[in-house]
Structure formats: C-alpha cells, structure tokens
Length: 152
Image 1 (cartoon, one colour):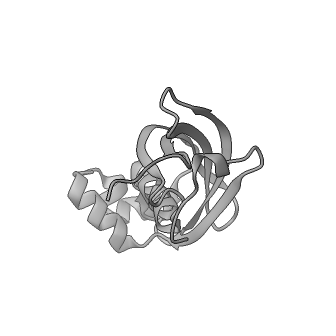
Image 2 (cartoon, rainbow, N blue to C red):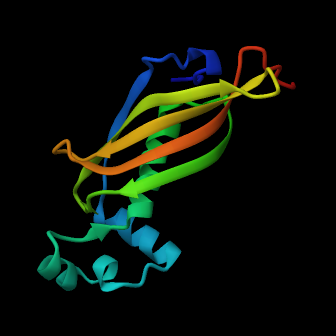
C-alpha cells in the first residue's frame, strides 16, 4: 500500500491482515546482542533445546516485528502522525522458525480538538503459523483526517 488510511477510512468493520514473517535464529541473535538480553533462554542453544522446543524469541522483539509488519504494509504511511500508546499481553512463546502474522481490527476512534487529526485505537493479534495467538496488543495512534494540510 503506497499511502495509508485517513482517520475517516477506519470504519466499524475495518480490519487488516499483514503479510507473514518467519523469525530466524539470526534475527533473534541480532536483537539479543543489540538489547543485551543475556539469559540462557535467548543465548544458549543447549539450554533452550533442553527446556523449550528451541530458541525462544523475546516477546518485545516479536511485538516489534509485528509492528514492522504494519508499517511495511503501509497502513499509516503518510497518514500516521505518531504512536501514542501500545499495551501488549504476551500469551504464548515464539521460537526461531515460527512464522507470525498480525491481524488488526478497529477498536475505537475519536476526533481530537484539532479537526485535522483523530485518535485511532486498534486491536492486534499476532498469530503463529498454527493460528495460535502469541501476543495480543492494543495500539493508539494519532492519524490525519482528510482535512490535514501537508506542508510542502
């Protein structure tokens, strides 16, 4: 999608399904190294294989990937002003080799005191390849209305 949704385009029945993404061991390593997640669950392959079904991905990493799927889809491209709040619930672990998809529905919306913007609240379900929900979160974003005038 080249340009995202205006505030007015979020209707009561609005929903969106992102593309899918497979989480690799290399992706987990990069995140864990960058953020300093220095625990055996994320760092030690032997420990992970003995105690889990493989190398676990940090929940915050999986949620960041799910948000990346939204951004790559273009849902808020040139329409989103900023993300105001994200409230995650981590329900099921995600492992290297799992494939995630973000299923999004409108929860609510309201116009702000400025008529060129509104607040859109969406519910997200990040599901794995088996259809199990790994993360459920609500995001609140400020979105442009059609009356928004872009500065050139």
